[in-house]
Length: 230
Image (cartoon, rainbow, N blue to C red):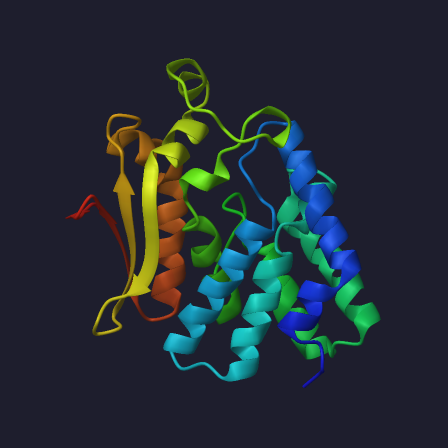
């Protein structure tokens, strides 16, 4: 096992630079927030999933590292960002001296997290998929040039992704009491967006989460406004 910890990766200036530039690139083309807030949430969720299921501490930490680095490929282009990010992560982690067997698990997860070509090929990849796709929240919506989003009927009507994310008043991912299901619980303001609109843009991601959860031996459920939807 190497001494390349999650905390070390978080403090690494090169990794942080790529996260910042990747988020700036996405902001310039109108995407929701993909900054530290997103990757840190994804890292915490990925760790929680594997830790709850009894995986060893290092595997849980590698899931954190993969989640923290998973979107750096957006600095190159949104298209194919998972595979590009995996190659970038390989170079960074190899230069830092992480062993090949750990790098392999991290880059495999990163390369398989985007729904366009994703697959839960390992437990780390499965945890990253669920952690990434379940990060739906109002604070991911941003105004032009990264300014705070000021909702109006006009700007909410422009983009369904902004509208659906802004409608989410609260979001929580947790295990059921018997640990047989991962449950994404959402509170949606139906005056802003309908449940149907949520699934219009997220159904492929939710199905991917269900496949990833199944590979971990659990179910995936979605509860919206206290009603089970998936």
